[in-house]
Image (cartoon, rainbow, N blue to C red; front, side):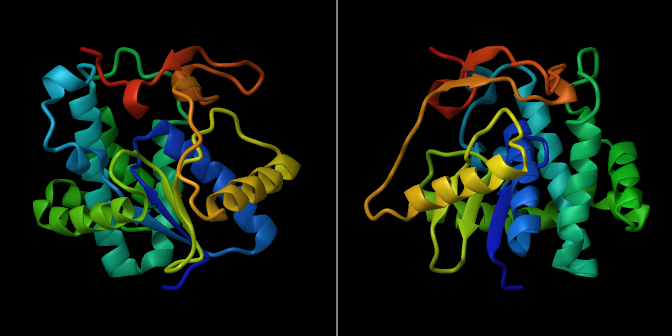
Length: 239
């Protein structure tokens, strides 16, 4: 599938989800096609000791994201690339558009029940949830994750956006905590792509981030989320 935008996502990442919502607005305005591709936070961080680098719940959350990507890989194989976008939307509705997850067991995002419900909403066989533990798919997901990082370098996270592939610009993010309206969405897109296209441009960054305006964080669209310092681009534990 040749698309206008390749969007590499991990389904448990709230900032990737927020950016994907923006991309869907831009897609509708500009008639872009999007190929929803995979990048696994669990696999790209496999070389790290989770116990010393991340908050306690991160390993379970990242593993849940990998489990859901295995299901998405099976969906893409059996139902085509176009089926991935609706499945990602169904994942996000359950994981990030639901209420705060306090009190839930870490890794709840990767349960068979959640996967089966998301598959059914996307019009896909719920039986594909059996691929949550299909580790034979990890090599392909790793290869796609490596492909994404080859476009930007390794010191990034998710999402990665590749505009007009294979030769167009690619960038991490943008990381946004608020969803722009229709006018702002197109304006932001033009600014981001214009900046990324400038020869020699590498980075414009700040590590202070608002918690995104998502129900999973308990932040409404009428308020600003708590500001956090994402050390080294993530909430890794400082030593």
